[in-house]
Amino acid sequence: CCASACTLSSALSYLLCAPRVAQALARDSAWAPLSFLVPVSAHGQPLRALALTWLLSQAVLLTGTVDLLAPFVSGLFLLAFTLINLFCFVASLSRPNFAPKLRVHAKLVSLLGFILSFLAMTAALSASLAMTIASCALLL
Image 1 (spheres, rainbow, N blue to C red):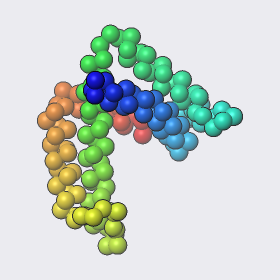
Image 2 (tube, one colour):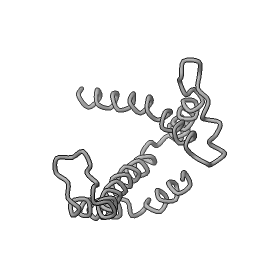
Image 3 (cartoon, one colour):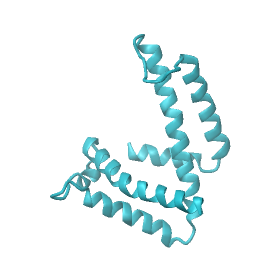
Image 4 (cartoon, helix red, strand yellow):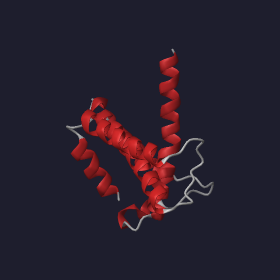
């Protein structure tokens, strides 16, 4: 019962957040194919981005195996953790007044987080790592 509620909550949050993230990427990106996602409805809703999100999720569901998506999503989350830790480490080295809003922050903690996240990403996703990095590179 709790697992079902958690799954439903996650699905609804992704349904609300994914179109807005896609629209923000389109608005901030210089990549022309994403420019069709920028317009919003009269109420400020990103309807085109919502339609694209819906089409992508339906395409995955129509394959019949949602398990194909799991390594890709895991890879993106681990890549995000890896890059956040790397950026915190580089920012703490380059700017002496860098102070994230954390109670405990040290340069070595960010470096250790980067190393551990990178090792987890490569160990857990060795088969799909190249696909994840190539997909992220295409989005940039």
